[in-house]
Length: 170
Image 1: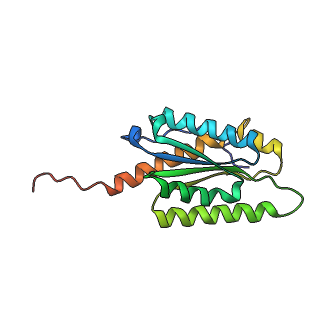
Image 2: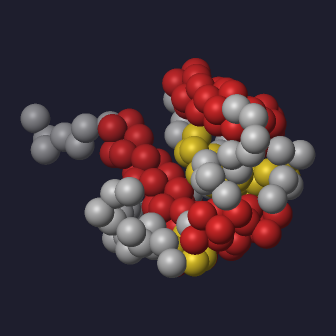
Image 3: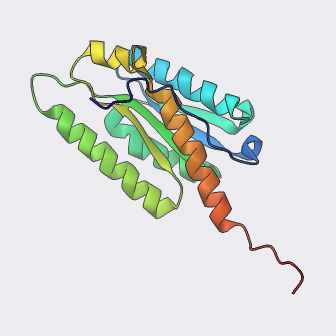
């Protein structure tokens, strides 16, 4: 385990114009007790950063495996600056969790690169439900806060790099 034990102990990045950021959130319906807690924390962090509620669109997909496809559909439907993907894949008696988590991570990475928009991996990969609860509002905070802060930072980075250089008159 990392030294940092509370995922909610994050500092929001300094970003100008956040009220105009347009954000999508894709949420897995699987393990809803966990994913809805992640969603709540993400929305809380986004609004705390100044993003208008009207600029946040939430869609639900059946499971974590469908997060990349849901993110792609969301990005194609409107001019979002980025997307947070929230899910929870709990290890079971088989290695299904490894296949799903790897596929989701790869899919979101590829989508981020192809779309040139951040697609944040907010998927918990715990060994059991207790660990999931610990990371969705329990003793380790809430990964949803971290995912939202990461998205804000990445959108701000992109906007800072795409702004035209300001001339001093020469």
